[in-house]
Length: 111
Image: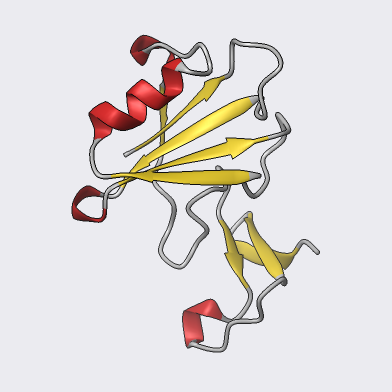
């Protein structure tokens, strides 16, 4: 389960947060310094959802402020809303720093 929320406190190091509950692997909170979909600026790991929600309150986000979004597709980046993946990840030949976006069913290089 993934959720996003807009930061409500000014003078913080983020404008929006994403929460990703990966079950037994814990909960990740990603911080972004832009409203545009992108890789995160920072991230934190928590062992449970309660602690992750509590961290959100430091940014003025209440539990009801979180909006659920779809989980990432297989091989895609956890911190992007859109389906974005590292080129070559699917076939075990990752080209780190090179990303592609799924547009109309076709993977397109984005950087």
